[in-house]
Image 1 (tube, helix red, strand yellow):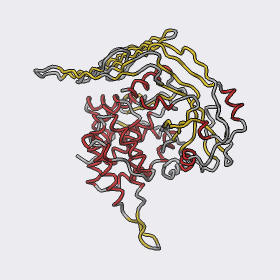
Image 2: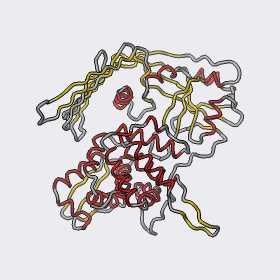
Image 3: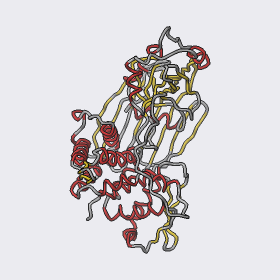
Amino acid sequence: MFAKSTKNLLSEIDPEGSLVPVSRLNDSDSLVPLGLVIKRNRYWFWQKPKYLPSDFNLSDVLVGDPINPVVFETDFMSFDGKVVDNKSGSVGADIGPGSITVGGAGSSKLHSSFGNLKKQEVDVQKLLQDSKVRVLDLQHSLVQQTREKQREVLAVVKERIITTQPCTVTEELQRDGSCTGMFGFNQKIKVSVNDKGKDIADYDTNISLNIPPKTIIAYGVIELEVSKTGHFELCLLGNVQGGFEVDAPVKVKQAVPVGASPGKTRSKLQKDLEEVQGQFKVLSKLPANTRSSLFQHISVLLENRSAISVLENALEVLCDGTQPDFSKLDQASAVRPTLELVQEAAGKGPTQTTPSGPLQQNPKTVLTATHLLISSLEVMNDSTLRVLKSCCTHVTLQAVLHIVQNMASNRKSSLKDDALAVLADKKVFEKITELFGSCKVSLRKEKDLLITEISNPQDRRPLMLCIAVKGLACIAPPT
């Protein structure tokens, strides 16, 4: 609940900015000015980094005297918003000075009121002067452990957004396509489910999450570029990334690109898909019963976005060569059965013959292929996952696969093609159109042709759609 409320706030006030939403209340105490945060870069090139607050600040890992930051505090803004959203996800907004109000029409409602917020900022000019000749203690445990991870970077907290009064996170949900949610002060969490057609129309569950004043709800960081000697520089520009000098470049998990035919110009979408094409081949070569079971588990997970996030995190841990804590995984959510299935498939991969004898298949291959698919689903919103699940039949997925392949190649699809015969069903065509629309791709008919148009070439959502569809189509059993 807390993570959802902070993420929702930043989606309105800082959608493409540098602020990081706080996901856990416990992290608030660690996010002091110049507190150390570990930035963990992800496996795939479209994934946003994770930020992990630590129990240390910059002075704890310095050689010599501590650095005492100078901090300025100002009024940030007041936030009071109401969002009414239908299944298509359309939202209207009305923004005024110092406050934001968002509204629309549909089946879900969201009301957010964070009251008056404060902003604290570190004096970066003074920090530059104080840190100019300082050195990190490379023997400190946190520094050593971060250096060992190629994808991790040290950063310090430079700004914080803070609540000034007690607040409570409140949510209200309703079934049958109607979901209302509220995040606000001095409220209680209320969950209401309405099953139409039953004698008992609804029931309420009241829960309350109280948030104290002076709670950090968002923060910004400055990354550190650390030399072999321990001297460091502050990365002040957004396009300058930190890291350790001894680190090798971060390697994104991807297949070897497939060369295009001479004389043909490939789109960026097609190039990105070619980089992960090998992962789809791994999924398609799994035993039929494994593919079918994996498809069934993932189909269940499409109804639970939070469970998809848990599975994505667990798969990332496995890809790093460590074991997730299975005792914390909910068996009913299909997360644990999916992990066990993938691990079993990875451990029983086929062998390859070499001149020196049989070579066991790299077990990480199956893990990374599954992680690729789940990572694409993890960045989708609830409405996209809902409509994707409605398309999860073999024949419908094959039709969508045909369309996305042509979209990536900048080709139009012919409605006379046998692969698109299912589109003759009006309801199926409407579902597929809604799926593409939720990923910012327009889909329309022109005579016997089906045309796709990506509204923003820089948007990652069409790529996520392609990866999800190609991955699911590889494991969907014939019907």
